[in-house]
Length: 493
Image (cartoon, rainbow, N blue to C red):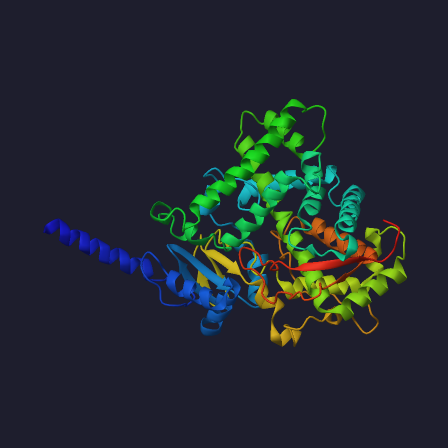
């Protein structure tokens, strides 16, 4: 009886301790021991359909900075331009989350480049950028690689769309987008009909739909994997990770046999491993695999989804598509498209900016973590608090944009038709931890869309219904839809 009383007393103390919050901590919905706000968030997610709408709904109740308990994880949700910029630009928030899911994907360690911080992140980012630039990242070679990929895609679309046959846009850009990056990483490209890569890219889309930016229920309550390995997604995530790492390990092993004959990122990293054998912590084969996974995922899914959103929105707004084609015809005509043409295609650039604002492919910035005790507004935030910053709230702010729900590219043009830059547009984030693939993504967007509309008029198939609701997940992607690509000129490219 004595031990039972002790157990009950300890349990009561634990439950009380688990739900109390520190002094001057942001308020939030009522939390419960062990599960935190799980059931309320799940209920709102089922009602609203999207996690960023859940955070927006709670912000209406608790303010632009409020707290939630995600299982055992303390988190604050931040909305609004000023608060979001403070999180993204202030060094105190520069950490990355360190939970079960984030270690599960990295051999149960803190590896890679996206979900690490501190000296390791600084060293790995410097190495990645330095060697990717050597392979052409951000230069003329990258432009040429992307241009070649677009040309191949155009040939493939012409072949597949003969006699007015419709094409499914979902997955259309996957291999082409990845090829530009993979050529720099591994010194090779894939055929557009490569069945192995097509399967991998489908797994990418599935994995992005399974989780949310916080890491999902596996990160919040890791013990759930023992009780419900399938329903929790644990079994599927393990399978997906195994497929990815099998593919990446094969690529790395191939490079080991040709280490002195190739010049690409994988070879550069392998040689760095050899140089750092005595201190392999930062440079190891596991680190290489997770970096490749990070770049593979970040460099393909979001850009592919963004390109699909451009097609979808220009199908819905035929007047905008007509203006885009007219501007391309006037400025470029039949000649080859170059990246320097961006400065001359102001309307197209405004369209791409508006698609990024309107579609919100990344409605939340990649999760941050406080690396020390800090403050935001009037609140004190303890060290190691998870921070989710809603970029969606900035892009859809009624006070700033006036009509954020409306797709209106002209909002980014001044009275003379020139681009009007707006600091409220932040699809790649801001601050030190903004997306390192921003240059590649913007180049892909411009080159793919310009060349596609130079070569095709894109129409809605007769009787087809375009989707109104996208798909939720770590990122937002369009629901599948078909399109008809009508060649505009007889010459191929």
